[in-house]
Length: 379
Image 1 (cartoon, rainbow, N blue to C red):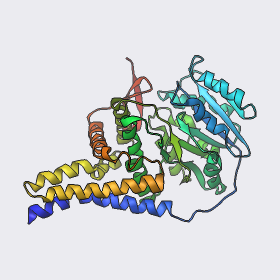
Image 2: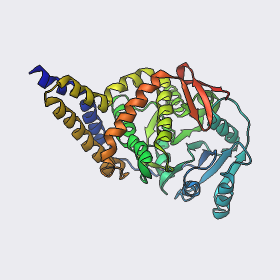
Image 3: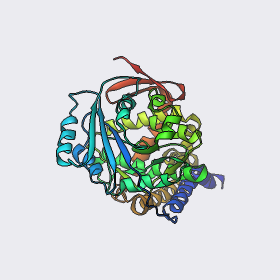
Image 4: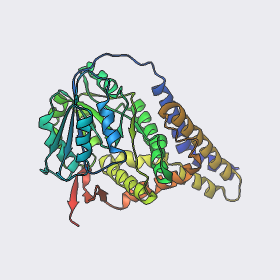
């Protein structure tokens, strides 16, 4: 009797979390939305290093905004950056856009992305500023969506969820699935239980006064998770953070699984040092080890197989609902067969995050320090 019941007790934590995440997602995506015509002028700061997949189209999507007034500032550290000819082509094809290119290699700390932002900051003309990664593509209504919440003066930052709709190979699918079955559900649960206290780096719109109140970009230059730090510091300064209804697209290269897992490990270690308690607790949401544990405690009883199947049936249903109804990324059901392997990889990177403090980012090697700071290691 115990051996028959125990496997189902074992899977309860990830099973319950999956159901809660689905309920939180439904509540968020089906809520009644308020319309706003607030559209203040905005500056988009885009730090760039090297080429991403389809860079020109990514950049051009920001030039095609249906918005009354905006400025676009690109920031590069080196005059020979291969992205500069793409930006020059952009300036030729969109001559009516208020667009600037800042080439400045000054270094203020180990986070070179933030250094680029610091160098571009004096060129920002407007009191609303958007920081957006170079591999991000947006729809023509993006600015209207992310700027509207600032009609409320208590809002200090608006961030956006991201997805990958164009999956190129299994490696890319593993990462895209992570957005759909882990990152977005986790944000939904956090939003429902404690409110938004962090930002997502793909897209962050911030009020100039709020940014200056926390010390500007200089306060972030020693941290790897500059997005988390920016959102959390503005939250602690008393401003409200909002999640935009507008998804942005992360455009990926076709990459090897090893490259994808290396990036996943960097993200895991970054979150471990930034939110150690929350990161540790996230272990109970990992379905793969609990499915294995259910099989192990069942012995020869078929209850273990039944429990593991139940867990993954619920997980599959949740993944399909998020993908087709909420995220609309078309990842599932096409890649559903890869979900258990993706969960195995996620559990492996979650565990490996505790076994080291080194990460590689954009060709540089860093050692992570307590509190989320980092120090570059010479190679």
